[in-house]
Length: 150
Image 1: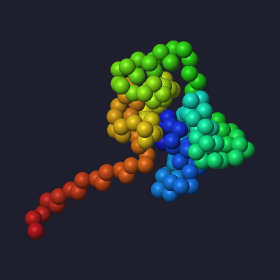
Image 2 (image 1 turned 45 degrees about the vertical axis):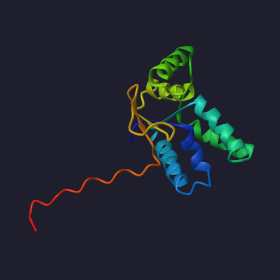
Image 3 (image 1 turned 45 degrees about the horizontal axis):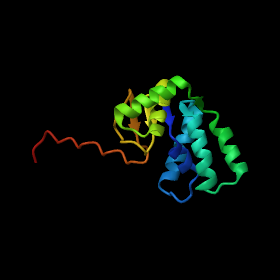
């Protein structure tokens, strides 16, 4: 599997019972990236997940603690002053929110080729990182025309 940066929304949807279509996709992505060691997150993602899990999902603190321990098995990027400056540049250059720019910067710095998120434009390339919305249906392949005439 491709080395992927996993955004907060994927982790939140993995626990969100009210998102029937997204929950199994998110849970499968988390499990696969854990199994293959191909997932990367940042401390920002852990902080955002914790806040959403407690406030939006209403998960008990002990369950949130279990999830944080599980997610800490992903490689975790910690921001530095230099990475914050790089994110500021991405914010200015691409018109991203600063928080989205910090996520893209963490994905780039950690060597991920793709960022799994629904918060940015799917298919875009930002700072060498491809944006992938794992909840969008992949387009159907074009049908080949038969060489024979009917």
